[in-house]
Image: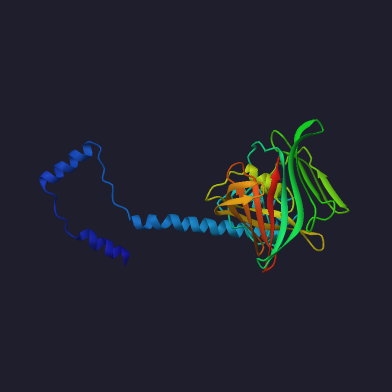
Length: 321
């Protein structure tokens, strides 16, 4: 049938071109001109999105198969490591790779990591801790002292970042210290002591680890976050998240997501003076604390943390030197 139809088309009479039109065509061909036939652009517009979608689906399927059947074997890289740097798993996320089984909540904002190697402000600051119930009754909860001082570890110029305290939520002998190199803020040593239970770690030189938001304290009674705010430039739109280790019973370490963002600014008056501050919301699990950070120098001036539905635990800057 197709052959008969082609023959019939060929038998149809075709008009002869006019003389002047034939001469124009021949002249055009002599100059090398060619006619470009139009194409269906709608088809090309549809091809690219479909190709991208197919690539993403194929990559996700490959990732899933690799993670289940290959990545679990000892010595093989994880699926995130294989796809690091791709659209589905950008490099910043690889720095804090977490799995669904060991994570408490998911990060809301871009991940925070290493802080700039800026100069930390040496000094000593004291904080008055209080508990206010129903907005009426305030009880004293002790004193926290935070300091940054030069020191030397194995001949390396370093800074000792130390917090110690008394009162409730600071057992007798509570100390939290972190030692970092002065030039690059490389982690050298960390020591914690809660009552009669000391603990510490010396960080190896290779591979080096540097001070980052991953070293922040979940319970906000330690010292690292105070130094981190000194090193982190804030503005009205600043936000970021971090996964930090969280030890659960029985001796299981899981990753807890902490989300931080600047929600406004406020002038805070404390026994140490009056400060213009950024108000930073800190969300972890179902709790939300507020940290007031001075716009000049990044000094933590005040911390307000809810304790249940009717109480607020606060630390307020009382003095500094």
